[in-house]
Image 1: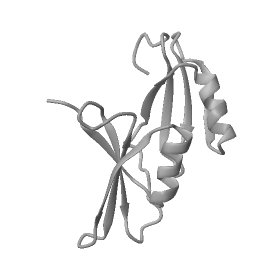
Image 2 (image 1 turned 30 degrees about the vertical axis):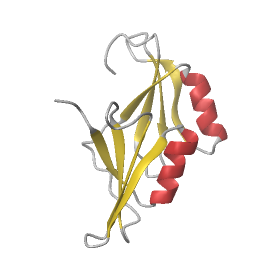
Image 3 (image 1 turned 135 degrees about the vertical axis):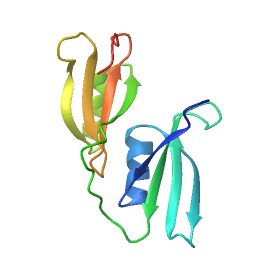
Image 4 (image 1 turned 90 degrees about the horizontal axis):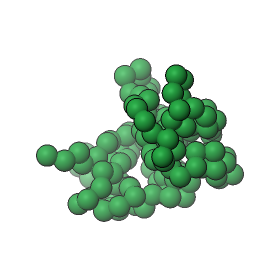
Length: 133
């Protein structure tokens, strides 16, 4: 078995793809319109689907906003330098919600940003990850 993807519903597909590709440096891997179902799927990631877990962005035509609920936590991305990555997100117009620093009761350096739909993304600084956050 292998973990394939995580699906997020988005209110504006182009805006979300721009965030993940331009701000977080992912690549759009493929896109598929489903006119009968009135939705579009876009798969994005850091590598090809055959070897990497990716994000599936789902745009339901005509739906521009979702209630995020309380069950979903966040996506996590390993980065070389959490503070520098936060600054790059900020410079690109993104929203930093927690500056880089050690996780409570530990030494792992983390930070949080939000995508355009409000989904939380955690940056975990490489070589500081000792336990789950």
